Amino acid sequence: MKIIKILNNNAVIVMDGQQEKIAVGAGIAFNKTKNDVVNIHKIEKLFVMKENDKLQQLLSRIPEEHFTISNDIITYAEKHLGTKLNERIHIVLTDHLSFAIEREREGIQLKNKLLHEIKILYKREFEIGLWAIQHIKDTLYIDMPVDEAAFIALHIHTMKLQGGDLRQTVKQTTIVRDMIQMIKECLNITIEEEDLSYQRLITHLRFALDRLSHYEHHTMDEEMLEMIKKKFPLPYNCAAKVAKDLSLVHGIELPEQELGYITLHIERLRENSTFNK
Image (tube, rainbow, N blue to C red; front, side):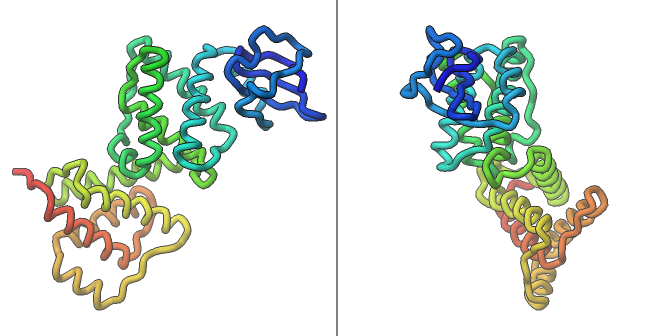
């Protein structure tokens, strides 16, 4: 494979047969020029992207070290998750990280309003985010806030083959956060973040929204539902209030059977929570 164009010290465009590809590897372009043969032992990743032009533009305007760090994170994520990520992650994550690093150097920090929900809903991806901000600290000596770990987690999640769209993921996570806030206000309780009941409720709400988007839902027989209504009137009324708000604000209709399951989760949460005065 011959080098067609050097993007930076760690990335080159090569001609592989009749096809242009991007070869990535530590020092792959060191002491190389156009038309030189690439050292195949230095190639860590070799891929063809539909958006080669975008990647080239990105690499031409960001520090080389930002691309290297992003590639390290992607490699770690794929190993940690045991799956390949969508090739667009090389553009999306690199662009995000470079901007975040520059913001941090200028003393500008963005708060992630979905931090607590992301930690629970996308636990493995959040662990990758924590590794990433530590890697940035070890490499660039920059302390990134934990909020950034959550931003990275969202990018990793949506770039999994079955991850979905980033905008839709953020919307769904925001809806879950709003539902939880309404439940807290309805019950007048303080929720401990590490409470297992809280984590189960958040996870259930997320998958309930997932099921609705695929026109699926839990089933519960009428006798069981009526028993839940009578035994847990406060949690059920709370679940019904959440469902009404979900319908009015987002146009999402929760089946009554689903309210039964949510009621059980709310009751478990209520039993383990601290009531506000």
